[in-house]
Image (cartoon, rainbow, N blue to C red; front, side):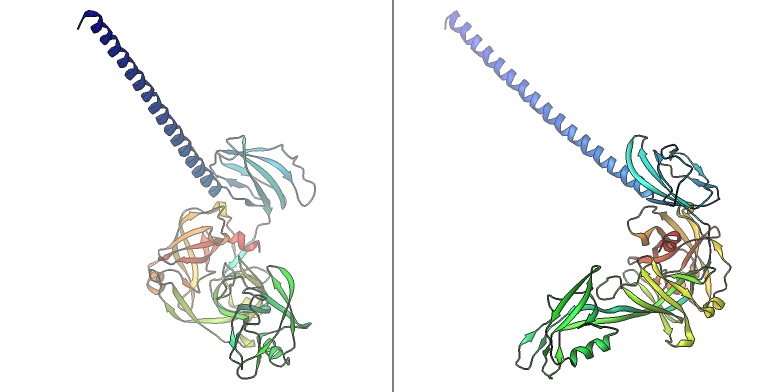
Length: 449
């Protein structure tokens, strides 16, 4: 091999080395770009997660409605990196506070005092510039309530009859039919049949049985809207006319009265009465409150909620009052004189949700014939929980109550919660996996029914 050939081979090898080197450089660049892209995506995802957590935490601590007492100095200590500005004033009339003239720093304790009951709108801005939400600031009159904590018997009459479900039956010819299927559904309320008001289940069934098989035009309330459905009855194997429908006209049970005010108005349960089959909140026509005695208690255990068994005698001499409202916040109505003489606790002031703190508190309930105070621990306060019945998280720590009930049992719903001498809420739910723990509703939410 001569010198020229060697020089040529060296140059060729050098060229190949350069190409390999350049390819390696490009490969490293591509890898760096991929790493940078992944790093950027990871940072963006982490920021999104942190922003979501921050949003949840702030929303959790910042209620959509804040009540303050008229004529009283109130201190709001929300500790939120945000500012609020008055953007609307007085839904009752003309306010002396110009819209947009007041800025509030929510990261520090804020002292408020309003002379009269009124409403204000506050626009909250995170970090002072990001629009977050508008708060309804309500100035309310101060109020005192009698905490009760005693069991009561409840009887609620539905508006018309409530449809539980449809079914099929066999005709004399052996066919299986379901005349109501597709026309009526669970949760419907039947108010009229062929123009005649439906008052209760027995009358409803008689109108079908003795209607000679004529078409039945029903006026129905479904999801708040009125509609008409025509159903054709058919004879079963016994020759009786049926339409294949299950209905209910009432509900009854035992619960705990939360409070009574100075005028005899009461609130109980802390949650509404729902139908046992459909789980829908029952639309009531009227209801009655009765005296009740606890005759047995089944202790709660993990996975098995406990229960109070009560004795209710549905007689006129045991009536305590009338129920006129069943809603998600509880049942409400007016007590009679007998109830007024029975519930003699001294009235106490209400405690607003921003005044509640984590720590010791008490509930009043009746598990051995006499209402008593029992110790609990408030674990968390959800100022803006989407479920109105779960604003307070609590744990029963009283050894006496735990020995009797195991914690919270069915029938204790409505037991008033007190802290620092104020009534702040009512027990509403128990955790199935831990009967010592449960939830409560803020008393101000019950009073807004």
